Length: 59
Image (cartoon, rainbow, N blue to C red; front, side, top):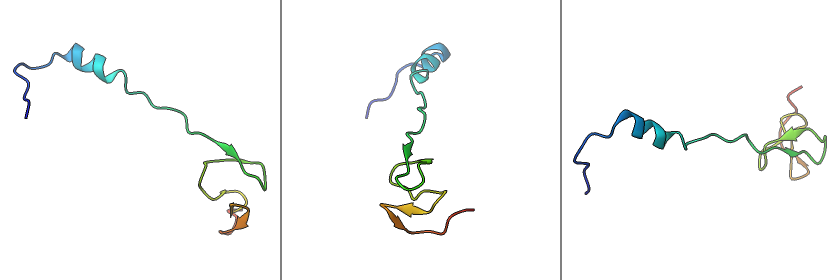
């Protein structure tokens, strides 16, 4: 297993970590109520998934 011979400097470490960025979650429209929701998740507003009622609506 490869082991570094020298300590990596703080600037090198931070510039490497600067490439790790978060992305905004992808939202799709619910086919029933047209509210934005996460894909492959039951709609929190109307409680449907794949055009079927699977959970009670939140309110």
